[in-house]
Length: 88
Image 1: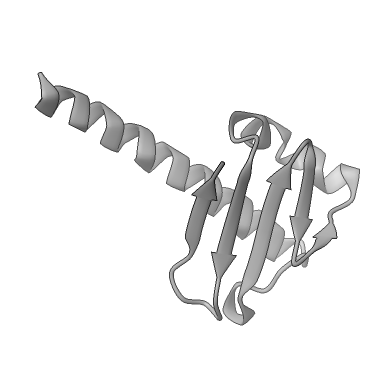
Image 2: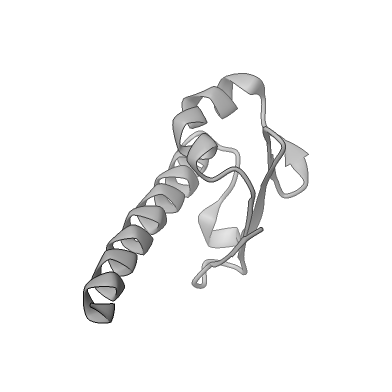
């Protein structure tokens, strides 16, 4: 049974990573961050910050469904390297 649970957990993690990647790619495309330069994203209490600055409500609303699924997190990326996700 533990192997089946592990498979379910792995699928859940894959979906979460897709969500975070979609968010980062969208913010990059909209000019709020540059993936190649590194960035920090923080989502707390309904506010999304990119490099310490809150994004406008209209931008937040583009990702609202995703952000409501992941209500507290920090993503750190150092100059285009793999990113670290901390979920509180």
